[in-house]
Image 1 (cartoon, rainbow, N blue to C red):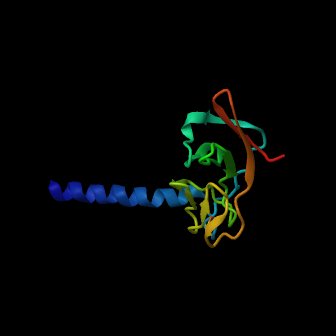
Image 2: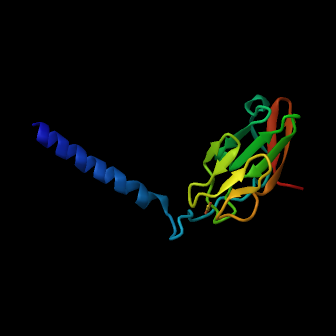
Image 3: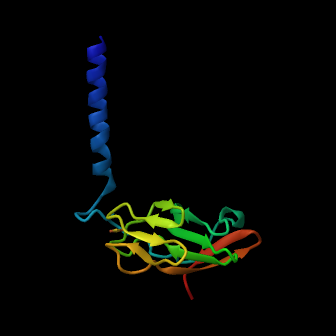
Length: 140
Ligand code: FES
C-alpha cells in the first residue's frame, strides 16, 4: 500500500510540473506573448497612500506599476514592464525590482537599470496622492 501511494504521488507531481510550461504561452526568449501595456492608458487608483512608506516602494502587480517614496515624501512611479523584452516584473526586494525572465534589476526609486541585460530605464509615470489614495497614469 505505501509503495502504491508513493507512485501515485509521483505521477501527480510529474503532471503538475509539466502543466505550467504549457499554460504560460512563452516565446523562445521567455517573454510572454501579448505583452501588457507598458504604461496605464488612463489614471488608475492604486491604493491607500499609506501603503508606500518613506524610503520604500510598493509593487502593484495588477497594474504593472511600482511607486516609491523618497525620504522627503516625494512619490515616483514607473511601469514595471521590463525594458529588455517586455516581461512583467513581479518581484520587489526592498527598492530593487527583479525581472523573472532574464534577471535584469531596476532601482524602483530612479527607474535606472542596476543589473543587465536591460539597458534602458523603466518608463516613468505621472503619480499623485489625492484624498489619501495614490493615483498613477501615463506621463504627460
Ligand atoms: Fe529580459 Fe526582463 S525581459 S530581463
